Image (tube, rainbow, N blue to C red; front, top):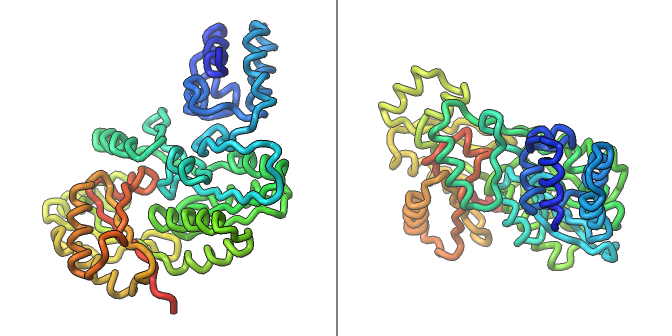
Length: 377
C-alpha cells in the first residue's frame, strides 16, 4: 500500500469527502486529491497532522505507519500546491541555489520539474471547484470550461504558508533561494513571499518582484536557472535578474471584449457594440500593471499596432522574441511567421508559448501577445 491509498482508505473509513478532509488539514481540496492520486507526497508537517488526526479517530495503526514511514525519505520540494516534484537529498548542503517562481509565469508543475526549479501555484477556482493545471495541455481544457462558464473563475495568490514550507526546508538544508514573483501590481504573491521570508528569519533568501507576468516572468525564471547552472552565485544572479526585468516588455491584442465585460472592466453595452464592430483592444504590461494601448478595428489593424510597438521598443537581437496565444495556436503560428517575414527574424530566435488561466482568464481566448527584451540603453 502506498501513501495515497492509505490516505484514501482513512478518509473513507471516517466517511469524509475530500473537501471535508481538506478542511480538517487546512489545505486546498485539490491538495487532498493529489495526495490520494500520488501526484504529490504530503510534506513532514502534513504527514504529522494526518497521523495525529488518524490516531485520534481510532484508525488502524497499519495505515498510520504507511504515512509515517515517508518521514525518513528525501523531502520533496513540492509542498501541497503547485510546486514541481524536485527531490533534494538531505545530504546536499551549502552550494544549492533554488529558483522559485509561480504559475503567473505559466511554468507548470511538470514544466518546472523539467527545468530544475520550483513553481508555486496561484489557484484557479470555477464556482467552488479548484482547477488543476499540471502541464500545457491542461490550458486548452481550461479554456473550454471558461467559454462555457457564466462567470469568470476566481484566482488566488500564493500564500505565505506555501513559501514558508520552501524557505524552512531550504534553511534546514543550507540552500540559497531566489524567488521571482508575479508582478506585485497584479497579485499579492510578492507580499506573501516577503511575509514568509520575515517569518523564516533566514538571510539566504532573495525575493524579487518581477513586475512582469506570463512570458517575461517565464524568461526571468528560466534565465535565473541558466545562470545558476553556469555556476553564478546568488548575488550575481540577483543583479542580472534585476537589470533584465526592466528591459522586458509584453503587449497583446484581445480578440473580444466579452471577458473584460465578465470581469467588470467594460459595461455590457460597450462590449456588445465593440464585438459587433470587431473592436480589438490592445494592451501592454507597464509599471507592473496591465494598461490599454489603444483600440483598433479588426485583427490586421491589431497586428500592425503590435508591430509598431515592437519597433518603438527596439528589441535586443541577442534575445528571443516571444509569442503567446490564448487557445489559438494556429493563429499565433501565422502571426509569428508574419512577424518573422516583416522584421527579417531568424525562425530559431522566435519562441511560442500558450498562455494559462491566471492572466488568460481576464483577456480571453483568441488573444495574441508579443514580448521582447528591449535594447540596453
